[in-house]
Image (cartoon, rainbow, N blue to C red; front, side, top):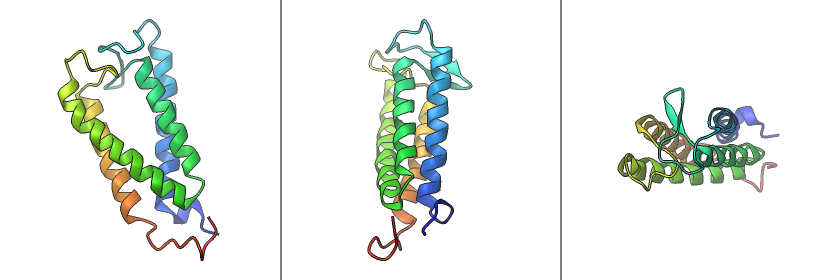
Length: 138
C-alpha cells in the first residue's frame, strides 16, 4: 500500500487542502456585511478576504482534500492548482488598488499565493515520479 506518509503529493494536498478549507470557513465568519466581490475586504490575520475569495478558498481546499486520496490525483491537482496560483500571484500584483480586484487581494495574499505555487508545483512536478500505476495500487 502506497500510503499518504510515503507520498509527498498526497500529504501536501491533504495539509494544504485542510488549511485552505479552514481559511475559507473562517473567512465567512469575518465577512458578513462585506460585498460579495468587494475590492476591499476584511483582514484575516494579514490577508484580505471577501465572500468570493472565501468561496475560492473552500473550493480549492475541497479539491485538494479529495485529490489527496490517490497519488495520481494528488500530483495532478497539486500541479494544476500550483500553476493557477502562480498566475494569480503574478496577476494579483497588478490588481491591487484596481476595480478588477474582485477577490480583495493584498500584498500578503500575493506572497502567499506565490509561495503556495512554488511548493505545489515543486512537489507536484518532482515528487512521486517513481510511482507506477501498473505496479502499485492507487
